[in-house]
Amino acid sequence: MKEKEEKYLNAIYQNIRTAIQSIEDIIPKSTNDDLTSELSKEQDEYICLAKECEAYAKAEKIEGLKDNNFIEKAKLWASVNMSTMMDDSTRKIAELMLIGTFMGIITCMKDKDDHKNISKELDELLDKLYTFERKNIDRLMPFLNKE
Image 1: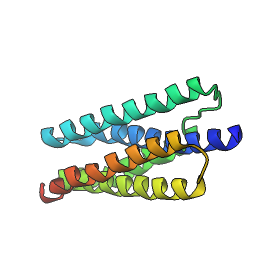
Image 2: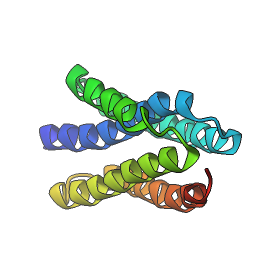
Image 3: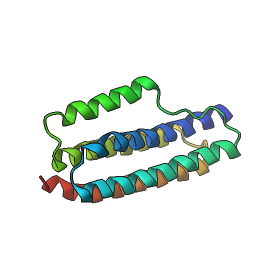
């Protein structure tokens, strides 16, 4: 059971770490102060969620908590840079963040289904991530109407 719990926790943690890295990669591209502020707030919340995962791992004596590997990080960085090379408008940045957020939501839904009956605490953490990402969509959508 501990192995399944570790796998579930890692799935949640990697989803969160992907969001954090995406924001780190994309904030320098933003020239819209309101969007930069929104992304910074989102990043702060993702960092809090990552710390919750780390605290859970420590409390449950799970030592195998893993960030995304170098190749995944490099692919994400390259994707952001390629996507903004010709168009780094506020609209484009919002679009990229929305796509990433939708992917995060899809991952949450799949992870919940893949890890049924493993841990109520991890289900609650995943639900918190899911709810946060749903709200992020509403906060990012208005930036699609900006240049």
